Structures are given as C-alpha cells and as structure tokens.
Image 1 (cartoon, one colour):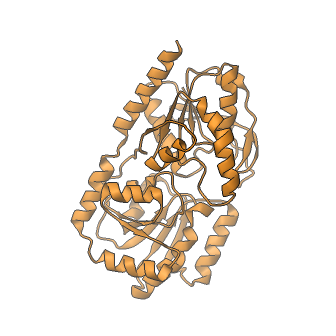
Image 2: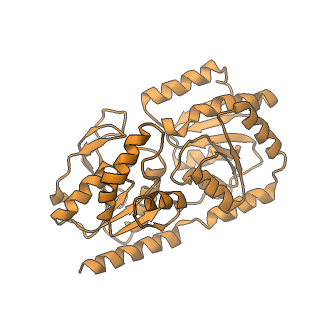
Image 3: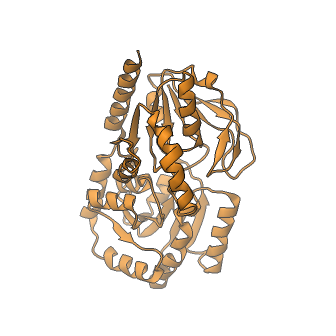
Length: 360
C-alpha cells in the first residue's frame, strides 16, 4: 500500500496529520509506504531519502518548484511495487501519477483535502487548470473521497463523482479547565490569515489585559518574520505567544489553559484543528468560510466571524462568550467524538479491497 502526499512530518499541517494518523492505523496490520518530497517547502535542507517512521517506510524524492507548483522526479518503476496507490490532495504528484496509470501503475484512490483553492491568487488560472488538467487527472482514479460537501460540489462542477468522507480526528481527552485564553495551531501560511487574529485580539486585550493568544505552528522563515513583526508593531508581545511546533504532550498541556480555538483562515478543506479542539472541550471561533460553516451547522456549537473587521468581530465574540456554558462544551465534545477514526478507517479499508478485487 502506497500513500502519496507532498509534505509529511516533520512538516506540520492538517494534511500531514491526516495522512500520518491513517498510516499509523494501517501499518499495524499491513505493509505501508509513504511517498513524499525530500524537502519541506521554504527550506533547502534535504531529508533522508528512505526512513522508517514507526511501522511505516517513508520514501522521499527530489523535486523542483515550490509549494504551489512542483515537479517531482519519480519513476513509474517505483510505483509498480504496490497493489494500490492512495493520493492525497490534488497537485502535481497526482497529475504525474495519473499519467503513469497508462503505463501500468496500480489503481488510484484520491482524497480531496480541499483541492487547491486555498487562496484567491491566480483564481482564473486555477479554474482553467481544474477544468482541464485536473479533470483528466481525476478521471483516472477508481474512487475519490471528498473531505467535505464543499469539495464534493466543486468536483461536480467538472463532472467528477465523489463520496463524502469527512475528515476523522484523533480525539484529545477532556482538557478544558475553565480557561479563557485562545489558541491557534496549524500551519503559518498565507491562506490561514493568522495575521488577522492580531488586531482582533488587540480589541480583546483592551477588554481584559490578562487574556492570551497562543499561536502554535511552523511556516517559512519569511511568513514567521512577518507575523512576528506584526505582533511587535501591535505592542502585543506580552499577550500573543508564538510557540512554533509543539509535540502532542506539550500541545495538550497548553490547551488546558485555553477555552477557545480560533482561526481566521480564508479557506479550509475541512477544519481538522477545530474538531480536535472541540474534543478537548474548547469552542471554535472561526472565519466564515464554507468548510467552517459546515462544521458550525453540523455541531451546533462555536461562532462564525468576519475577521476583516476586527473591532466588530471582537465585540461579537465578547457578547457570545457570555452566553456559553459547560453544556455547550460537552455538546462540542460529543460531536467531535462522533468524528473519530474507526468508522472512517474501516470504510477506507473496504474501498481498498473493492478496488483491488476489481483489478483482478
């Protein structure tokens, strides 16, 4: 079994975490390999070409390009070793391997992970690419899982059928202990709009100088420096703490001091972090986008805001916060526990068996 994903740990993000969790579950009973790129985006340091990570093997290949467009150096000979290839997201890995399908590589399954409409940059070019190259690429897949109804609707626009399989999560234990701090964790990148949290949080500090915002995650050196500069310019260094990557134990220890997850992301494929936070008893405060709206509607918890107007967003948050109680947090946790891995993993495994059987 081969999973293909452009970035994998030590890279940090929702896509990487989804694949890591799935691989960890599958590698207990099957031989699993992960194919990924040999450098983290925004860095020049090469990672090991072949490495065993727990019970799975990670194979890394060279590439040229950058995060939005890259060309991997990949031979179809490597791919023919496997019974099935599971492609994660829609990118040049997926495009290239779909071409190799004509050269006898194993059947393909694709999980959408938000496709590639994460920002509004190059919208017209992306749409053209999606309606031409991506349409041909996806036509080679035996099965496509959409991680949200939003992704499914987008695929329907180009005549591609998919099944919705919402992102499962590895739930946290109950961690809420009465804290009122806010936390963001995930990638520091343009589409995440983490910088929009700064003026919003500045208004919260005016109302309560003891409140803190924790920003956990990594990004390119340039993205991190821009974020640091904006925190300093807003004179919020005592209240906003940027902590970089934290392992699971350290992240959970930090969550215990918090009451809310917060994200100003302009686009999300699903919203994995928000559901993870809900499993710990935190309430999600989210930018109004299609993925977060879906979580809000299904869970009946949290708050949708437009962080473009920081003052109004802060006023709405402070008013809403007064209305929340422990029952809201318990409802959030029940929703998150219903999104756990076992049924999703079983459905994925059944699909693998069906696809392999259809090829014999």
